[in-house]
Length: 87
Image 1 (tube, rainbow, N blue to C red):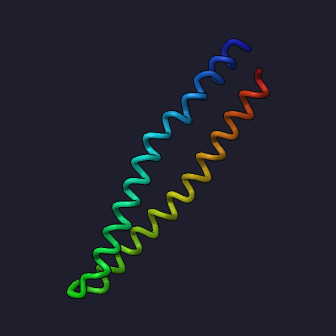
Image 2: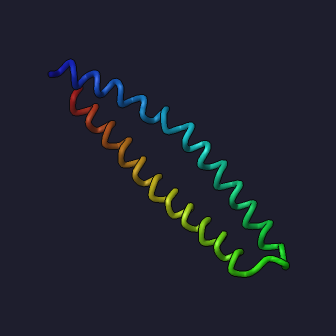
């Protein structure tokens, strides 16, 4: 059992590295949407409802990112704590 748990701990160290490409892509996506919102805000000929729909979507994305970051932090802390208990 101890060997199995040691392998689980060793493999769990890869989680952080696996999340990194996702987080880089997510940050890039947020930056692109932020740029889009700024560009759309300058367009006087667009319907206000459509502008608001974009703002709402970006707000939802930001909220989701905040939740993701909290969950990812908790996951990594839990994995680290578990690894320290097993060793």
